Image 1 (cartoon, one colour):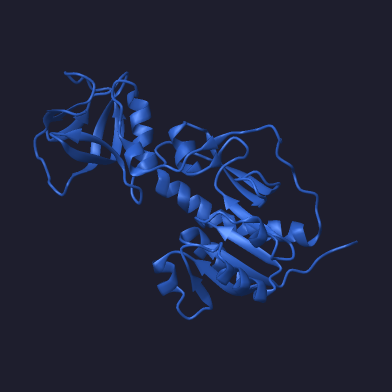
Image 2 (cartoon, helix red, strand yellow; image 1 turned 90 degrees about the horizontal axis):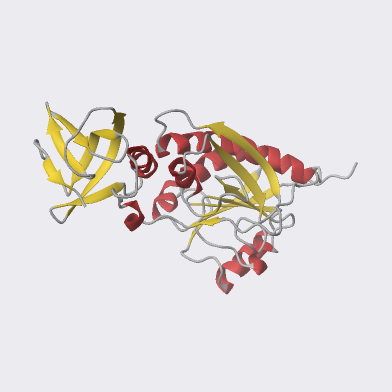
Length: 289
């Protein structure tokens, strides 16, 4: 039976997902180079052969990577989009770790979006990279349930724990020339990369259930779900759905018996953690916008 042998890997990453994958792979494969555009990663892996750049798609780094003569590139939470000539360098192509099911959740912030959209599961996907964005063949994928009150930090922990094993299975498939699953060519489902301004809560449109999911999906290390209180941004990091009756319009925030509540459509929230530009308020009775 025909097979390949992958020996030399270049890995591209900026955070914990890449660290987890690197730590697993380095025990079995030669990681000849780490490529990052994160200063923190550059400092953390100071003893390794590591390249730091904000843009990989220039002639300098193309020529550098060409000399590596890599069998495989792995993009594990890396922010740059690879141009075709860069994807052509490794013998067996580039694999991309995408934390969402494709084609349904192509694009940016897939874990956040799956939580916001009240999906029952998250899906981790390992894709063979092509010229599209998250359009390549599926090498491996696996579902994990989103349990009650999971927040984005929990979903990242699940992803970081399981991606290394999915990558090992993917490399095995590539080495053994297994047939990959193609995505539908006519699908065009893309979600945008979320920004801080996208976290503003629309009290007239969102139910309390949606506000709760926003808070869980955008809590630290993300900028948080927020509203304006006296022209200052109040950021919510943790809440709990409650059946308590609260007077006022949607977006009213009040203190009742030393507990902070937020009035929303259909169901209200008990706010457990928040910040107001560094200030602590002991007694709320305000309307948020």
